[in-house]
Length: 345
Image (cartoon, rainbow, N blue to C red; front, side):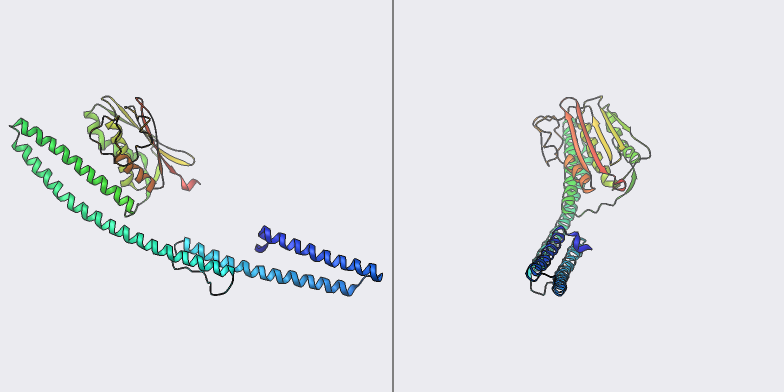
């Protein structure tokens, strides 16, 4: 019986049985010593009384256990997402006092959850408004800059400044876009659309994205992994995360550098590894590189704004994965993305 699964209840019944058995036995021995005979009547009455006590205790504990089961079922229903679930607590007693406290806690949690939903909605709407407000002037400035570049071709000094202005506009646009993405992730306004994606196809698409830059800088992007490996992920956001790692690798390798993207399916996890033979990460920076806007005093990169790696980390973790880094200064860096194979567990 479920009641006797509880070790303490089982011990209680064993002690009661021992006590009642000892009482019955001792009473019979006492009568034997005093009257020189056994009393079957007293034996029957003692046995009946003992059984009555055991039955009363059993029924009481079974009732209490049933109340606890109902309370546990209510808590499980709440944890499963039913915020309106409450435990009946309209009687007197310690258990009902506890249930009342649980109901109060549930009401407080509901209030906090509603406040958080309002905050998320506010952030989502604010981010959307900021996005539209910023995109329009940046796009307009880029158009004006393009016109100026054409008009100043015969004026080298002005043309040079216009080209630099275009580069800074690109940096502003990238910063704005990354800020919006990472803030949307923080606000919980992004719903990941998971599907089984062919990893090889994803990585080939990322390589095509950087082919022109890699060729111009005389760097190589090499892929290695099974053509039949699949990963449950959001294709768009996973591409964003790995692209940020590849861009980071290109930013920190010299001419002739090598960037390797490797993927493999292990028994428990699927891994995607982005490796480079660049300048590596200084030991002082290794624990800070995923912090937003972190700038190393040892870095030679003057263009980065410190959002690419934090964004990649946020995207990977939003999809249930983890990201680690291993690096040696002057020998390159290795970023490893791990995703649990839930279907295998």
